[in-house]
Image (cartoon, rainbow, N blue to C red):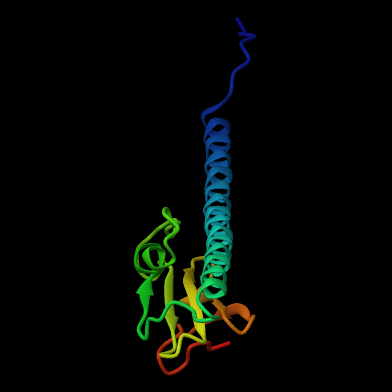
Length: 148
């Protein structure tokens, strides 16, 4: 007697499972990239908030920004200088993904920056007192407050 049972063969099942695995891997890669991009957007927004706070500080202090000749953490040291209570930390908050601040000795120029993830090399998003902001592969330093 001939059986009329319809079923999938082992080969068909393996092909379907393989396709599902490939699609899941592609989705994971896409999702990881989207997460990095979202964290980078958060960083840019947070640094803009710091810039607004630093500019407000200067308005109250004869156009002098908080003075730090070497790089300091923005979410602790700078936050204390600005006396604004709670300050945002980088979503990862591990080097190079931390928010940093530096000024010249006169307090007339400053730079804020944080590392960006969605790049192949170490890249920083930098906000400067001269109104420039953008990316650079070198972080601000005492010699070059704004490398843009």
